[in-house]
Structures are given as structure tokens and as C-alpha cells.
Amino acid sequence: MKYCVNCGKELCDEAVVCVQCGSSVGNINAKNANDAPNSGFAVLGFLIPIVGLILYLVYQDSSPLKAKSAGKGALIGFIVSIVMGIIFGVIYGVLIGGMIGGALYY
Image (cartoon, rainbow, N blue to C red):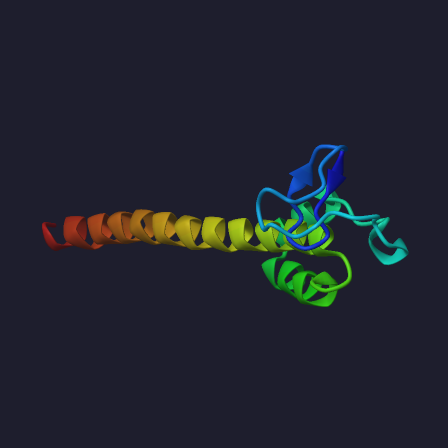
């Protein structure tokens, strides 16, 4: 399998044109030969979203598939942290509210 140099979509080996963005698929040049989706970047971006964002910005032009992995990991990590913050905030509010409300009845 090969990937589109322009958008990063996975292509068949026989493809001449990318079905996603319409750019012609020629020989992969040397600077993109090592570009492939990187799960390490995705995990790092998930655990530390700001690092994932920085990796996305750094690799955006030279290695779009690596950049896409880091960006996805950062986005998912950021969303998960927001959702977990809301959940813990609600649980904390219910517990503290219950303690304060229960103390008022004594």
C-alpha cells in the first residue's frame, strides 16, 4: 500500500489519482519515503496534547502522515481530558454538596 503525498489517504498500489483529493499519484519522492502513520506520535499526543500539537505543526509539511497521527492523538487526548474534568467536577460537586447539605440538617 502507498499513501497520497497531498492528503495522506491510503491508496492501492495501482492508483494513478487519489480518490480523496484528486491529486496525481506519481513516484514518492525521497523526503516522503519514510512518512507513514506513526502510533508512537499518536500515543504521545494523547498523553501530552500540547506535545502532539507541536509535533503536528513541525511535521505538517514534511511528513503529513506522521503529523496527522500526532494531531489525532492530541485532539483525542484533549477531548478526553475535558470530558473527564467535567465528570470529576460533577462527582466532586455532588459529594461536597451532599456533605454540606447533610451538615445543615444536624
